[in-house]
Image (spheres, rainbow, N blue to C red):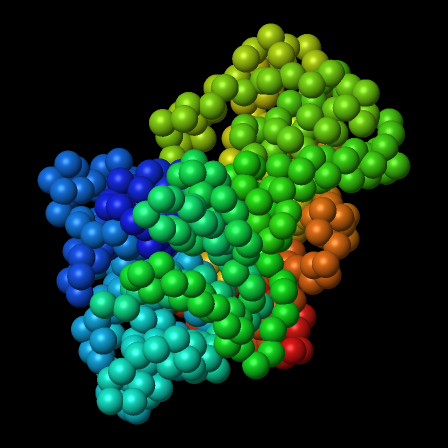
Length: 506
């Protein structure tokens, strides 16, 4: 999960891109970068850290030009703290290219070998985004005649990228002297939306990971980039688009709606906020039918992404809704912090209880999901320490049992509390008196009801069904090995079952 932006405007875009990155900061806190273009010359500044820490006034002054791209990084491939892997990436052959990418290529290692042996291109980091950049550069060289570019040539190159690359990718790229290119993988796994702003000087275009960036920057939503589609805006503001993939399927990542995206975003025509309200509705129905005996005095959300679901759940069950945790907003999101030790330490720094909302009560805590279980265990204990008699725990998402290989930091089963445990074992592990998970079909309905045209979702972290059809147990084992996981063993040393339900290639 990363945040990307690309804009072609009629005035300098440095402040616009900076403000957009601030709005998308929740999508990545490891590094940030902005690249702009002035004529045929690129200007770039990037580095590790939050957006506010990476850029200073002197950096902004050097980012000249009326078009550019930006990126905030959340590492899933490559090294977490390697500043060389901050984006955008740049190559100057055969054309000057800048690229920023959200997602993860599942065949990056194969592509690296092809580049070395066939394309004769060099990759300098472990980042799959640099691999993607070089594939695009090679395909542009192959498609161009006498190094001349036009929309048809560029779209032909994107078609070549689709044929070679596997996995999830939403991309913004700059072609020196020509314009802004954006495209999305043939399954539409990671989000990308287009906005437009009409000014007296001309029409401006913005592409971003989430619509909230368009809203705050004064752009009107035009539409989402379709799976497999490429859009091209030249430096004069002319807009072109074309479907570049031979076969497509609209299968957005459902975890974007559960946790990753901001609630005020619209993604693939679906309100993230409304989808979370629906999750609360379906979760309430499950509690009513399966655990009607629970004596609940208050429903309390785990801030912030679970709040819409918790409020709707309380309304449906006619229970008091209470705010029992106060969040310190200056602590990073524990889900995307590297290392269990840091994650464990940060929970109590991040949340504090309002003791009177717990003292002597049976409370139902509602969270968006349970991934590693570290945060859930700490929160249950915090509720008990604050005086709760009983602590029930509800998750608006099903158990996360499988790695996500499409750009979310859940790559190894050894890190997932539900990978090799039953619901009852998980309940005991986190210390709750009862545990309620959302059913997968209910989760799908909660999102689909808001846009019935989407009939398939990428749900691999819940069901092990990888939509791209190329993820094998061997691939997952190699990912675990690369990340230095303890083999593929759980805490008890038992070998994890890596046999998966692999989707047929569509």
